[in-house]
Image (cartoon, rainbow, N blue to C red; front, top):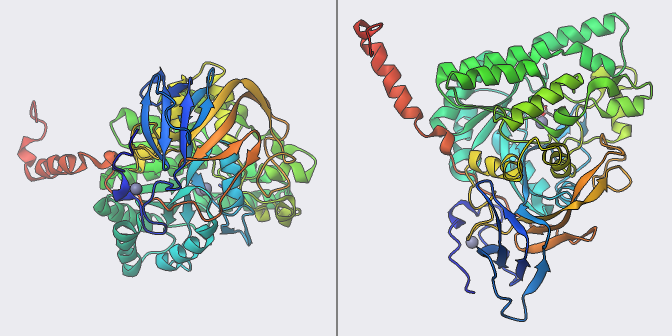
Length: 511
Ligand code: URP
Ligand code: ZN
Ligand code: ZN
Ligand code: ZN
């Protein structure tokens, strides 16, 4: 077997340059069921230099220096891609405890081989923010990309956005509609940002909660003497998420640009997305694992250490919301699953022991996502194995314009692959996880399906419960603008403009 031209190099580079692993490792995965989002098939997979070279039945073993892995009875799937993480993020007076090394250890042990993290600007400055995150990511052990938050607006920020897209491979910008006084943006900024995103072919993302109303709701709780973690949920009810989601969707429609709603946590928000989709609007909804499988009862646990673990925003809701979000995911209303991995240990969470407003917001999930979605959705028959690959990997690669280099097991794709044994079971918890946190919101959770092997760009990095990481080996993945979701936008703009210039045509049949 010969090495193919590495056809996706055009999108590689920047921080770590092109290179498909390059250490000469050859692996033949035999006898498994290879699952891509478009089909599952009995096939072997041959990998060389970090790249998938062949996918077909009965590939002969050939040369001696090829490692053969028997995958009989197992699923061979693209490694997970987590669209939403916060590694080493400065937030709420502290820093998330997982960095680009421990976070990657956790991810790889859980079958995720790439993630997209949110660069937070430094005092509103994007260039400084990127510089800081490049340093943080120097120890990366797997591939990663960046989204960037926009926290302030002026001409300089607009110019920097263009530089981020054209020179640094960032094709998405996040606007926080919550966190008043720190990250929150006004509608004015959001409108300017949506317009700029559209012109650059970059995807606008929103954290959709009404931050002004949240501040009011928080004060209400404090005035009532409710200072514990339950006050977090009570102060920011689903209607505030629904309101902001609806507002962002309408503003995106007004600008005619696609919108990505991160961490959809409620029926209220999901319904707004469903309605917009029904009307033909390009809106992507991302549920996160915690919102799909946990419920808010934990926030009432009398033990602060337990209750505070579950504080994240938007809050984890009553159980009915998670069920509805699962249904929306299985029916395509919501498209891909993230984690919002944003981990703080119990000492950090205790900053808010007498005031829930000071509990750092965030939960773990980077290590757990692939297993929980398999167990709760594939094992229960809610989604097929091909849909599993779609919602955990392929859809993310397509939306952020790095498919089929990522998100597929096809000739020429990066060899980011997992081998999952559906017969084995797992138990989760802080004693066995790879995150640096001393707590886990999935403590004691059991289920079926186990990622036995993780291959990151052609290297076996997780096998038999043992990690074999190479700090610094993770590559920065450049993500080009104008992904598929922008295709056709200019046509609908032209039709809209024409309709404005021909007012007499309005209302006539066929107009
Ligand atoms: O509670 C959360 N979600 N923390 C991370 C920051 C964010 O809003 O995504
Ligand atoms: Zn290459
Ligand atoms: Zn958020
Ligand atoms: Zn987040």
